[in-house]
Image (cartoon, rainbow, N blue to C red; front, side, top):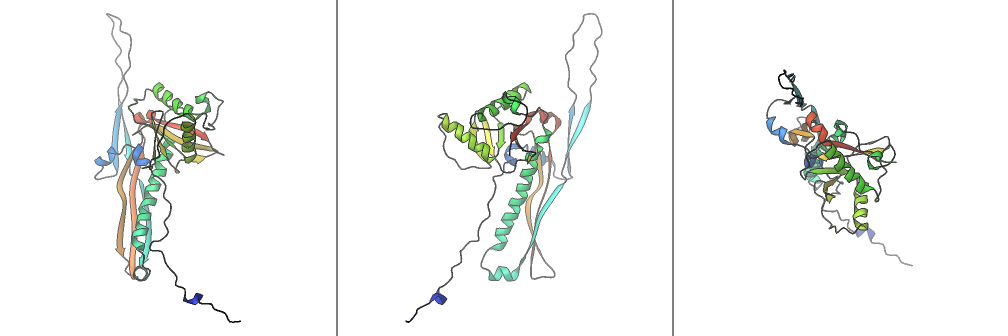
Amino acid sequence: MSTANFTALNPEVWSRRMGSLQKKALVARAICDLTEGAKLTVGDTVNKPYVSDLSVSTYTPGTDVSLIDMGATNEQLTVTTFETVPFYVDEIDIMQNGYDLMAEQTDRAQYLLNDKIDTAVLARYVDSDNTDITNASIGGAAGAITATSSNIHQIFTALKREMREANVTMTGDTYVVVDPSGAELIEQYVAANGFNTADATIKNGYAGDFLGVQVYVSNNLTTGSNVTHWIGGKKGAISLVVQKEPTVMIKDNPLRAGKNVICLTAYGIKTFKRAAKDLFDINIYSA
């Protein structure tokens, strides 16, 4: 019996584009105060002093009053974090492989640096000058909150209550950064309670408003000891200065036929004392 096998003649087809890596939604710049960066055109430090507060006392006619001692304290935001993504691309590879490797990798490098900034900002829940929002804040026992679609709304109303009790000025810029599980619980709650929600593309992690609070979704929240720290409060409580945006520098390699590519950023993060009352740490149980 004769056979016919012509598979050796079959051409192989290569995709026009390389496989893309997933990117997280980044939220830091949406929730931080970025104004201090405009002042830092030279040097590495922003000084921000504050004066001691005044107080009211009773006045008795005909008697001397006790004058209030006053003073000033200086705080500083210093740019001390320098991070880089360096790599090498050979001219032979650029010539032969048919892909825009340089563009693909520089885009990825810039994203990775922005992702590091995002993670660092969301870790500043520790700067909060308020009591953590815990299970006790929504009427339960002590400990982290086991978030469900039945109590998700209580977490948000508890935040708003504690903001009012802390005399935080609420001017429509209240926010919470939740993880994907938290976003799912919000979606389940609004679906079960008849709210009309529309699908929208998440931009800078923004997923929409819930009970008057702007909701951002991030995979960069800090988790440890079975607690995920959602962060929220008033936008601008955390100051972020990116003195050097993630920038690509391409340099000739003197000993090779190719290019050294260095992506570099320089930044500093600070929660100033007077702003720490605007920041809240929401303790969510995670197994």
